[in-house]
Image (tube, rainbow, N blue to C red; front, side, top):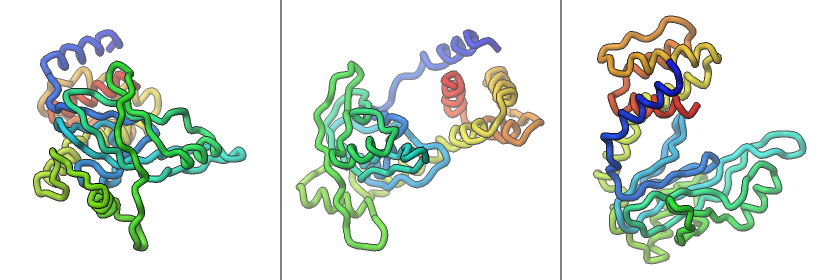
Length: 247
């Protein structure tokens, strides 16, 4: 299927959908979320980079996770966790670092002044409260406890989130489950050859409206990617098709 046809399909599918959340926050690729809606973000194969919030005061704990070059070798850089408190209504926000981080000296410079840049859809910088999340005593870090302590010490009240509530836990679980097919398709797609990727992509677009799909026979990446696409809901398939257009 030609790219132009795929783009037409996606455009048609998305025109009937309006955003459900009042505030959405998108992270640049080298930034990872540690705590969202008062809940710690668990490990996943595909890192989430977009989060929805209600209007009002919200919080998120982030850090830079980036491979950096050091004397010809690559090493993983994890920055200090930074808690961001922001007040926003009906807006799309983006979080980025002030400058690229690709070398060890860049990472060291960020650690000396760990601040993110938050902008709205027009590119205008939005002022938020940012602090390095203080460490509590213990063998390992508990970001949720640390955040609770931070909020208590700074008299920060969140109008839209009750930290640790059953509602928050349920919503976080639903969000994680809803993205399972997309995460697995991304994972197996990354393992596929160029020919396999093309085969899977064409198959996915051609069969987007089929209810009972049978996975493709072939290499393991293609079989597994097609299996997870077939398992996805209508909304998940739309996300997968949108993602495929970006590859």
